[in-house]
Amino acid sequence: MAIYFASDFHLGVSAAVSSRERESQIVAWLDHCWRKDAEAFYLVGDLFEFWFEWREVVPRGYVRFFGKLAEIADAGIPIHVFTGNHDLWMEDYLQEEIGVVMHRQPLRITLLGYEMLIGHGDGLGPGDYGYKRLKKLFEARWARWCYSRLHPNLAMKLAFYFSGKSRSSQPAETEFLGPDREWLVAYAERKTSIEPALDYCVFGHRHLPINYPLSNGHSRYVNLGEWLHYNSYARLESTEGLSLAYWK
Image (cartoon, rainbow, N blue to C red; front, top):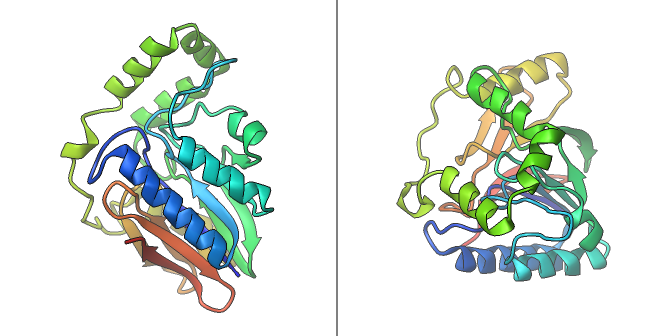
């Protein structure tokens, strides 16, 4: 049996392929892993370019993705979903309709005998203080309440406008900046200095597939990359440990 990890699908915008085509790729990957040997799935944030749940309304689309998640969950395979910086306004829709387990903070857990720290990665490590302040604002209940007063048509348009330029014009991340400039490496180094038994620190957010040995000689920092260009994911086995792979 194996456990699978992926992040940064950013469904809702086009990149190397359209959002609809990317959704089909993700569904095919989920189905393949489930039928092959999946014991659980960890989907580690930014599944959507933007997500918001009104009391009686959720964003349209993603029917095939949700349908496959529901099929897997109904078969008894646990699905863990983490909020990311693009979908931090998830509430309980996926829990109630599909049966996923939601996580809003990094998770410390033992999987297949390995000690893991799993999280999306936004706002962790040194630097990026502007975003950290903005995240605290967005996480405030009053901020969610205010945004929910907007009509969904206007709210979704505003969100996609402020999420940045079209992903289709942005090239893939290709450069590892080194341990001094990679904030998540610094965060992983700090965590493993406190907990040297940690085998893997697994994050998304960075948009670059990375499998980096940490300075204690035992732990590794693994970034899951993204599905805008790389279609990258990680697979955990009891004998082989955690490895990065690519869905073609």
